[in-house]
Length: 309
Image 1 (cartoon, one colour):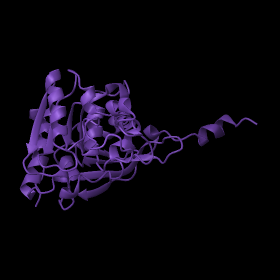
Image 2 (cartoon, helix red, strand yellow; image 1 turned 120 degrees about the vertical axis):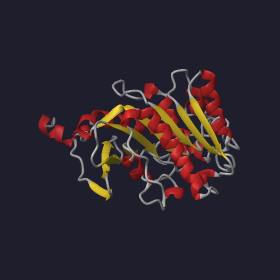
Image 3 (spheres, rainbow, N blue to C red; image 1 turned 135 degrees about the horizontal axis):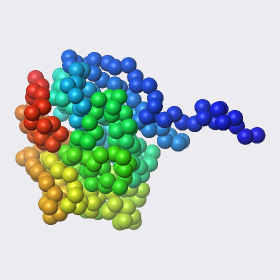
Image 4 (cartoon, helix red, strand yellow; image 1 turned 180 degrees about the horizontal axis):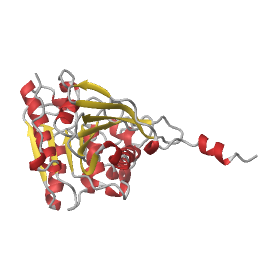
């Protein structure tokens, strides 16, 4: 017996573009937080959510930072920029909001749930949701910088470099910040035949066994002259993702004629381990200044983000 059309409509997954927003929290002065906002309801899967940090009293449509968390594509928390920032008061996302940005921190499906290209498609859906609700939220999605750390930096770079994976209605990404990110999976694995490495789990097989998929998941192989500006930060002593990965991406961007700034952070290991507090602050400040230069006109720039205590 066919379902009544009205009942069928009620049984369909809700469209996050039309769901009510959650009540706002105010975690620090001048900052409004919408936590756990659904942006995608995949069939047969948990709803995907994002946190949205906003200035409490914006002066106009806000530029957007889409922050992508790390965790080897296997784990991670959407509201975590990394262990070096967990003691900051206010935290880094609140500081970006205080500096005049809307900051979206989405979850995405991990490698235990789905394989490439699902992760970057999820993030594309987050951009689509932000654009669909930009009028309601006071966002200027034509000024969007994607920023990610480690595996999140890899996904941020893929998102910036593969516009075909984004909806045609979504404006191009304005820029990209990557921290200690894998960029060439075909050259990352110590043993490319190992199906248990983090990158193998993400692409769905040992890189040597699925070379086309490993190449498709490598930002360096998507660089064109139309790439947005990039800022690449990588520790010179990174023992998990060698700094050569950052160098490879910067070299590919320069060869294509795209703009890129490369900073090899002397003595820093992965997650900025081994850096002084001042060194960590410098990495954050460099990234904020790059983001501000791309997304905020000089005449409309707010004050500097609060520095860590």
